[in-house]
Length: 419
Image 1 (spheres, rainbow, N blue to C red):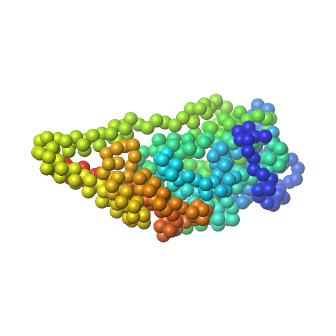
Image 2 (image 1 turned 60 degrees about the vertical axis):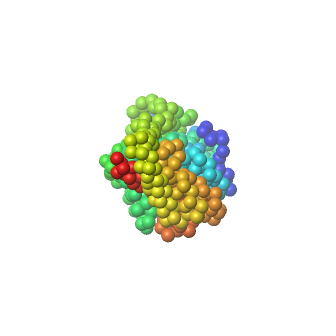
């Protein structure tokens, strides 16, 4: 029944909402008959109804159902990719997550970023009694009930995150992470009325402009590219009448792109940019410089001096990394593994000591099912990072990693002092 996903949510999971329409019962002919979150385009004999939503709004859930039931379109497009769709429909996904495999694939940082964003949305949604993304899931449920095909129109979230990472400088990433973490410990308060005010076009334009000013590369990937991607999916969907359910922040960009009707190369927007060769040069250059320096000390000043430099390197790397694991509340063997591994991993760009500590902690203290279920809530309480085993694994990733970076600079300084 779907064009992009063979699986649809079951009717038993449908959200019960008040379906009484806030407008006249007759079929709407113009956008004026709908609330302002709905825009209608008549393009080349096709009727495209854009429904702008907030991902934590009960009003949006009701609105989506009402528009689809009233329009009875040929196809429903939703701002979801297959992975996000599965996350919304398969509530037990976290419980079966293989953390060891995540660590092996070096995706722990991506997982943490996803959890931070999901936690913030869930806390906002919790105040309004709504799960994040409920309106998108509602669109797929209503479509199934009416036997309407569904298009999962968004770009794969993994491609979006990796393209965003490649487009953002290291300093910007650190600054953004700090802002997200500060937001996690604050108590976001927002009412449904404030949410509706936020969805006004002028307010959204201001927000998009602010994002573009502060993080232009991030806005390009997260907003502009996805506007183009969503537009092309909507444009190429089959049927004379289309209802597209998207975040309100995408309305303006999608409408402009549909009206311009310029072709979009979806494959180009799905490409993951390669890692800059400079990172490889730096990654291998530092270890070669350290080893070369120790070898030169041995040749020019004797093996005793070279041995002192090697010992300084080992201690400078081992101690801060072990302290980081200790502060993270790591298992004693995790602390030991970090201290032993750091002097060697600092000489290799292939693996870091923080991945070693995270893996050992996962093996020795794996999270239980309950902690997967509460992680989004626990993220917002600083003290619970040490009580939730999953969050402690993230601490055993972040703090030893910071210790290893500090140790590398200290060790390099100690060796330089011997010349």
